[in-house]
Image (cartoon, rainbow, N blue to C red; front, side, top):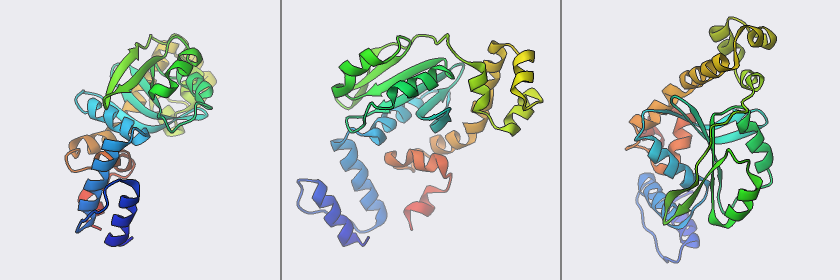
Length: 233
């Protein structure tokens, strides 16, 4: 789109009648400001979580494959903490399946949810799940997550690649690994593997957070390219 077309598109979303910008970076700066001020969608909520994670000594990951689901955001330090997001624009249709998948894999689990869903998700979620809501554009913890005691070692192994299994357990055969290692040992290795898998990508966006627009953290996590090369195109 041309600069004129982009300005017209942005005007259609806003009560402001006229936008002017001279290059792509100006437009992206304007778009980020507009979205973060007006919307509380999935990207906005991911931005709040990511910004808080940057202050901690952890490894994070976006859109993590978890059995038959895809987790929005994972935090790994001494424990694994999963964060699923349901904004006001999202349906709760898949939440039951997603919560079961996450409880099979991770030690702590949270749902970050819009106020309009709060009453319903309280009834839907297992007691181990914690809940965050958003108040005045800030995350507010509504319910603390409890330590998950239902982790399934076979499920954890099924999410790892053959290369990861071979490097950590010297085998790709689940039956062999389950017989040789305890659930606690498998969980410890699971965390170690995930941390190694995502550390480089996470450190890339953390170290360049001042160069990356907030709505683009996830993009650059999956595409670790110099932001200036993308923004100047």
